[in-house]
Length: 157
Image 1: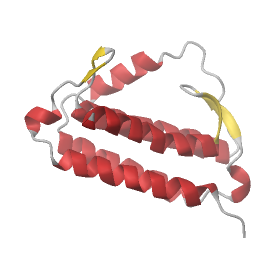
Image 2: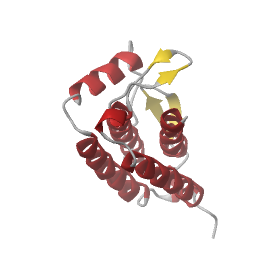
Image 3: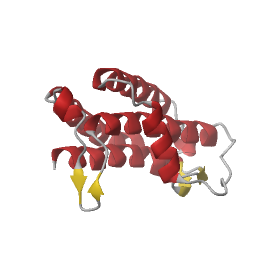
């Protein structure tokens, strides 16, 4: 029996997620809300990053669900990823790190449950992801883990 893309995606995704959760557990309120510095200047706080990851996780899963269901999204003209991200972060501004982490855990559980149902012939199916362009289900599943890893690196330096 051939290996499913999930066989390589899940272990990496799980390792990254465990590292993220371990890092979050070390943060007090001040550290969770402290804006991070990058080469591009000030960025989000760890709390805001968790909110961002939560919303991105949901968006990525909805894309994959639509593609697998045979209704791949069409190109969205004029989509502004920065504006979408800023709006979502602002919408979650009143939530604590604990609330955001719980929401992220819920989204991740839904993603894992969905990925377990993806049939072998659906992994290469494609659609137009508003932020990522033309992508396959497999590519977006891989991007979820990469996205989390990128933001974890941003937090831990």
